Image 1 (cartoon, one colour):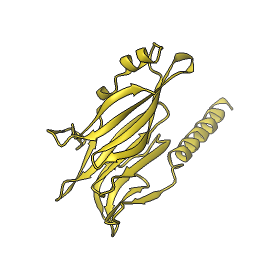
Image 2 (cartoon, one colour; image 1 turned 180 degrees about the vertical axis):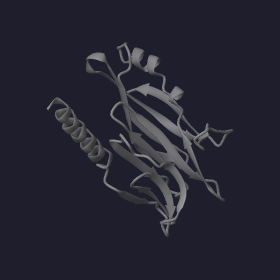
Image 3 (cartoon, one colour; image 1 turned 180 degrees about the horizontal axis):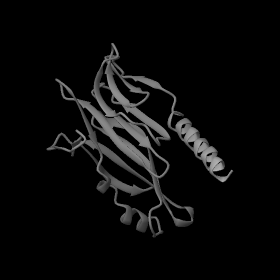
Image 4 (tube, one colour; image 1 turned 90 degrees about the horizontal axis):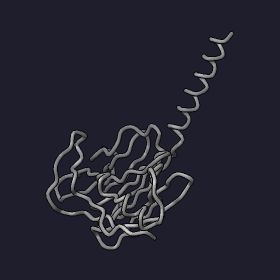
Length: 188
């Protein structure tokens, strides 16, 4: 009887996990000029007006809780925050005039120690979540977030994400690191 109970519990866990993985509502977020769109379904990709993929940011949404995305007014940049239970990642796609590229913000950009000091807390970071704000100009967008420490102590922070136009290097996942960077981190 005990092995059957374990099998039943395991199948319930797997069923619930599959439901959670697929709980994101598929979306198609058109660029302002309608030449392309950000498609969120089984993955996240920029597609042309006919639905053909131009660049894939991620092909696996396992564990993703929420996706926040905003296009620049000129339709050449799209920034995406992918949120998991314990953290968020910032990715982007940009059009350089001839092709689409993908990039991500380095985890090392976030000055956790300095922000926690300014926020009057310390300890091990438990979770971090962020969301997109407004575009300041065609190459800069605001980002706000929360750092969560033991005892549910929170430090609200903000910064500006910029498209650097500077040197990049291609990582193993095909992302051009260095194309976006966080600057002006501050406690809100």
